[in-house]
Length: 476
Ligand code: GLU
Image 1 (spheres, helix red, strand yellow):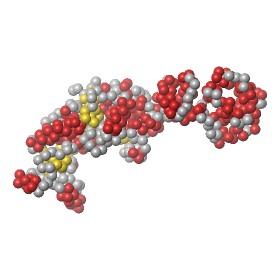
Image 2: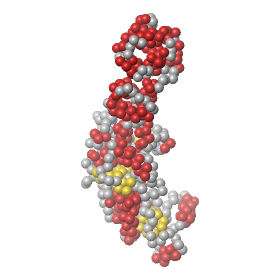
Image 3: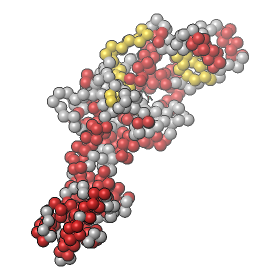
Image 4: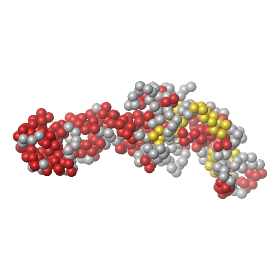
């Protein structure tokens, strides 16, 4: 069987991490099987579907490296085909018009509740006589279209992740609405389960891979496939993503959309790597740090867990720092350069920028950390508590004065590591203090704090942009 899979997002919000993970599993499977990965934009909810959300979804997928193989299918453009399918179902006796009003349905549900029953349509209009139907039409009632679901029916499928699944028709809420209310004899807007079957079939989808929140929909959709005599695709239901408290990951957990992760400074590579691990376990002996293009060769649904996946920020952060560490200084600089410019921070040469990246790159977790870590080079830092204390030590001013005097004879633009080291040694001897005291006093004067990357290299960079002397002179 030629593998054709699809992602079917609704453009009613930005690309959510759950949808992106579903996209990734579809894409990985398509790659593994030399199949085709397709995109279908489910934009039939005209009110809530927005062009900018569609763009956000396209951009997010492309950023993650998930490319689709054919032009996207736009669901709203297929409305006529959807209605044709509904007509066929009516003609074959699988669907009918239901004229029950909202009030009548509310009353029905209230009664069920009062009797301790779960709410369920009681199929009251399944077998209307033509006289009854004429009465309703005469009374000006509009109708939804319902698809018949037999209580006795058992629906089974072999889920690639969850194994054999069985649903009973009686648990599906009674005959299902497949088209919205519309004037008599017309067909209203087709609804999700019908439309998905019509589109998946038209797109020749072989495998439907989606979140486990669609399990009941799958049971309903299989009934529609059967009624239409269509090939039923293979199904795989991926586990949900939960937050650290074990609840479904939602807006309340802060970031959930791919564009937000990007904005925070996560790399597409780390995020795609992490999302693959959300539910999928690497085979023994395989490293958890990988590129999705490589892992597709060994991806399989056997290793996808049935249990929900907990979102683990520490692991994502670890992967992101790994990716940053593997980046060349040039690439890291290319990532940060626009952010530096946005702050109005200029540096004298590409070399200077590269050296800064080599200095701060190893301790970065997020790309944006580079901005915080570069800031003390470009902007005069505030004095922290520990920096202040250090500069109050009585020898500090003497040491700094000595260094500043020596710097007068050195060209700031050519200042080297060797010269920096030499100056520190000279100050240690001349001021008769420990080397540590010299280093700490210097760091406090230059960067306002006692923590930071390698002092010698930091000092050289600062000197090359003519900022060391001014900072030292503030404390003598
Ligand atoms: N538009 C549906 C969703 O975003 C698609 C589900 C499916 O894959 O069938 O949940």
